[in-house]
Image (tube, rainbow, N blue to C red):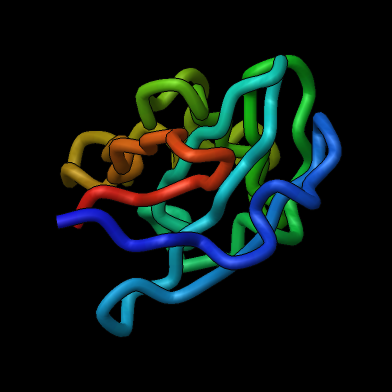
Length: 115
């Protein structure tokens, strides 16, 4: 099922928009003329990624520096701003997880998320 994302076409390249899908916070990102959507909460502490930074296709958590690839949600770097021991420990405990990546469909000059 497709759900239209209101205001998505107003996003400029490099901009992000937070919205809810069935009560879940999702982040829509306009990057290189395409749209991507990932979960808006970091997989470790639940930080809001909409407050993070976007460089190229990498979204950086504002709290502890974890980096995620917006094109697929994969974890690129884990807790870069914390001591290596804590980073290793949390990774060993299974807290280093990717983001949920959502399918985006562009049609009829609108942007939709597949749910």
